[in-house]
Image 1 (spheres, rainbow, N blue to C red):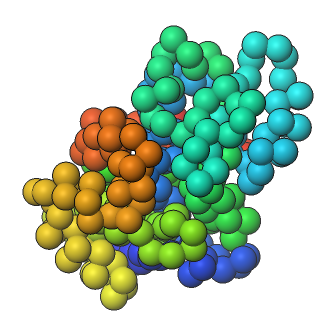
Image 2: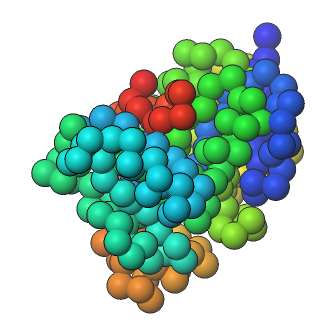
Length: 243
């Protein structure tokens, strides 16, 4: 029996509802998926993705004082009045251990919520930092898969395509029989080209160049670290927590 694997290169490929029975891995390398993985690795209780800053503030009122932190960005910059931005380096154990983070970002949290609205069977969060862990989770699930690239402003992003392709390649070399869509095959080819030179994404990716101009080179280094996180963040009941 073959495991069907498709890569949605941009969020617009996801149907509004009625997704066939399959798991979805939402990928946002620069930076939301990496930030969620960092937060959970450092003891965050859960990350609640929301669409807007206004919704984040409203949700925060449901928690006790000191229990919740607001995080996120718009156009890559921290949201005024929020506790945290969207840098994985901000989400240290000292700041977020035992806390609930309510997160809103331009692309990543929107893609997560869209996958939930479409009726995905299970939803995981993937980035370069946890490619190996995601591949192991997919294999253990044994269910058809969509790798959903959050992209940038509704368009294809190189870094998310590379990450999706690395996951496909890890699955393919793991021995499981796969039925790859053409987009999955294309992503795998792109990933093979970048596998040994991920650092080139600093200049080849449009959003990476933007982050560099904004002085966020340290964020890029964190986001380009391959397989440093053993966790699989899962969206369950409206919140992201470790598997």
